[in-house]
Length: 286
Image (cartoon, rainbow, N blue to C red; front, side):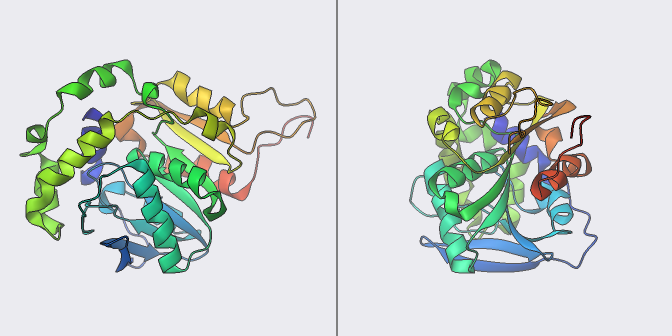
């Protein structure tokens, strides 16, 4: 899939660690050994990667978030150093894994940053387990299948496991995976996940968890879809009329494709930091 391929291209974006190296751990979650890394101090933050990605593939965002938070960066089912299971890979299942991980790790509630597939998983987590999510940073995701670009949706029927067999993602997988021969099974599950329809508009509209939507202006989700999501969350009304702004926010990165989003950690932090702190730029009438 293009979104999977685009997200996986970020695997080469290594993180520049300005802090001590994170501590790698494993947790038993729903019959799997989930690998995760802990870094930083402060309020807890869960970081969720995109399809085929690993923690290093998330680039500098983990280190930047760890300057103000206790970051728990996960490698989801079958990805990286986490084991797989015979269970289907669905957004509901992956979100349930994150919720179970939080219970195992003793994290009652946390902020969540998700990118691409991880953004959709984070959204599902906020819908299914709102008591576990303080605030959600939703980077390069969608809340329904029809939100993906038409050109991308047209490509999906042609995706096959063989397309990824000799890809850089396959090579990277074999270097660290518990089962180096498991890449085909992972690819099959991710392709099925990507092709599966979903439409969560009513559930998004009912959410009370504040969401920062981050999108590239040339992202895999349409700009109209990101704006529609923002409006479902209560955003988009005129300010300066004496009413509080929506707790949710929308940030569009210029000249930015899907894979370019995750490589702009410093720019994203300009939006993420005030969002997490609940700060808004003052207007004339404040």
